[in-house]
Length: 243
Image (cartoon, rainbow, N blue to C red; front, side):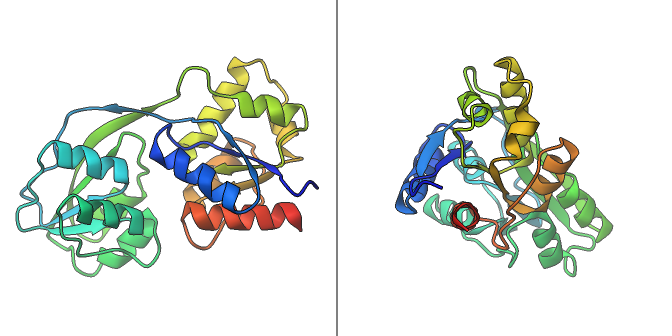
């Protein structure tokens, strides 16, 4: 294996993919930036009368702040440190960050205190049911606001062609939707054997929801880091490539 393995990354085409590329380069990899997510804002605003408000991404924070969201006296919760940092930078206090940076981790963090509480979840249109279902099971009254939609960008999928040609060492999937969009993009480019090609690629995914979606789609998974961050995903995926 080459000392500079090629690694596909599928984050939105903004500062997130730039940061991911920089991370991979710092780890001695050659990044293949292939954005699989494009953001379409809905112009909706999270509710301000909830006892708890949950933000799940930096994109959601940015859009809520642009809409001049007033959280009232509610407890603000962030899934993960990057979302928490974005909230603080936007001028919001952050009260809860779960130990596990996932929807199930947030449910675990709040389950004992939300019985009878109004909980607002502000996120994309592709959020899993784990968060609202878990909170409702804990007795919360849950309302969701869709802040943005995630669509597949035109022209995506060149990493699938690299995989089919045997020129891709690894791929880092950061959400269930990146898996779906990657397969769609491969099909749009006429790459019919993409699942077979991925057998020769080290596939890393963030968290169990992405792992489960990959399994449902017939995509083999080699790496699921304990910490649901891109840094951990990139590091452990490259360790697997080089092992």
